[in-house]
Image (cartoon, rainbow, N blue to C red; front, side):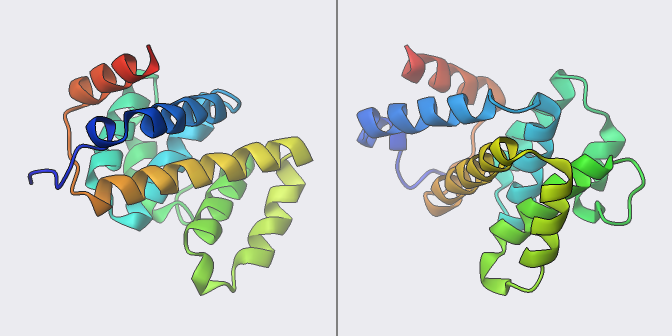
Length: 157
């Protein structure tokens, strides 16, 4: 699929700012949790670009194939901790916000496993990945991970 436009070329200052915000938010949480949230939200949003990129990155950081493959069925899979389940439930609830009913239950699990500061950081992380999904899906982006990393490095400089 050919991209409809190149966001970093069209709005470089805004995209650089968005990238820097994304990096700051993601670095404030446990990397394993970040990868799970990124992949799960991207699955819900149907963002092939982000699923590809974050699955490759998660593997590079030591995440197992089993846990990556089972994210789409995380509720039934026994390989996630209660804390990870709370984060995934919050990811599902916020990514599917208009569907509503699971929000209260997800918030209760979140509060049981995360401090208030962590709750805000995780919520920001969910917002960040949902934003990237909308940029990638909205403009038909799909890039090889090496290309994405090179663009991110250049934009951060």
